[in-house]
Image (cartoon, rainbow, N blue to C red):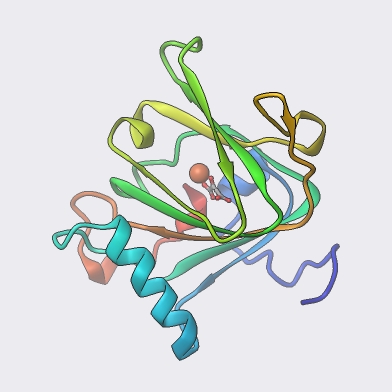
Length: 173
Ligand SMILES: O=C(O)CCC(=O)C(=O)O
Ligand SMILES: [Fe+2]
């Protein structure tokens, strides 16, 4: 993949959250995958989503540069349903969840390359999530130096939306 900066992936419609919450990134939505990648996505989907859940038709791929970070936010219910599942690749990073009503209630997840996180239930709706910038990237006492990180994010369809309407941009969450 070409190095940063690159505007190729800054597609119209994908930048609503990005402009406000994500810094140092490029992104795309992808609906066509190689057979090998499809097999991995099927494992992600089997692990994260229930049989009754419909997924957004395309998968969100976010490429965060080493200095990039994601500010706290809750994905909008307009563009994203009850479950968010993210596969982290390349650099480890720390995801912090903070309760939106009780800021003293928080937890951090160490996202190792190859790991999958699943936000659902209270973690999806009651907590903001963020990816810490390099200077703040600690897991407990342990420094987690940030490099380039790619995440592959599957989301369920917003409640009440039919599969035919799934063309909405997931990254606008
Ligand atoms: O990169 C990730 O794993 C999370 C991205 C995110 O929070 C978002 O796109 O809404
Ligand atoms: Fe998010």
